[in-house]
Each structure stands twice: as structure tokens, then as C-alpha cells.
Length: 212
Image (cartoon, rainbow, N blue to C red):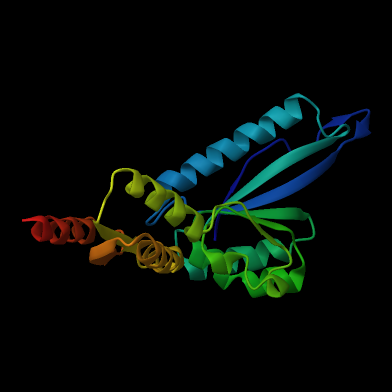
């Protein structure tokens, strides 16, 4: 794993200050670096603010960031190493659902609190197997319900559906199909994409062809 360390470390001013370490397993390279970089910068900003304002009293907060390369196998290795490190208090995972799902057993076994920024339902379910994982993102069903409320306002009768091939894309496809059936809306075209530009362009071409 590639480790990028940041934060304050231990500061000595008369008495030694305690350092509280939180780790983040993020997508800094590979398929998802844009969002992973945003998460890293936002987390570091908040850590700096907490330390500057001395919100933890005589303790300093340190953010330790590792790059999972947008790869579930790399992420599983990263999280296993972090979870086994007694200095790490908690872990934050990025937007890769398959990454945190693949590491769920390790997180459960090690009992390390983990905040997941990924959205797939399996990130936090089944609950009895995800006792230490806390998912912040909305479920696909929430997003589908909101989308179809808006489609109802414009009296849409047919839609094209594009989903990703990861766990959240699978959730999204099922949720959108259920919402469409409940709303009486036809999904005329349904295409999955893998994030490759050609895949996305192909999906757009299929939807455009259906409109002709």
C-alpha cells in the first residue's frame, strides 16, 4: 500500500501531548481519483481546524491516508494493516463500495470503528455483520424515490437508465426498476457502464438511438 502521512504528530510543550490517529483508505489513483482527492483534502482541512481550535484539549488529531488505487484487493490489504495497528483509533473509507464490502469481515473481526462514504446497501447490511461500519450515504432507494418524484412532476412516461457495474450500480438498477414500476413509468433502455469513457459513450448512443 502507498501511505501518505499528514497531520500534526506529537507535540511537546512541557508535557507530552497525546496524538489520536484516524486513518482514511481513499481512491487517490485508478478509476476514482477526483472524488478521493476531494475527500482527502476535506478531511485534512477538518483535522487542521480541530487542532488549531484545540477541540480535543491536550490531544492532537492526525490523519493518516492510504491510497487503495480504486482496487478492492488493495483496499482490503490497506484496511487489514490499519485495523491491526493499535495506534489507529478509527478508519474512514472512500466511495468505492466494493472496497469496504470486501474488507467488512476484517473490520468486524478487529472491531475498529469505520465510517464509510460509499453508498451500496451491502456496506452496512446485514447489520449483525456490520456492527462497526457506519454508512453516511443515502441508500439507492432514497435516490430513486427522489428522482421519480421529479419525473412525475414533468409527466415523464419513459426513461433511459444508465447504471455502473459496481455494487452501488446494482443497487441503483434494482431501486430504479422498482420505483419505475410503482410510478407507471417505462424504462425503455437500460445500460450498464464500467467507468471507461467508451462505455459511457456507448450508453449515450444507445439511448440516443432509441429516441430517433
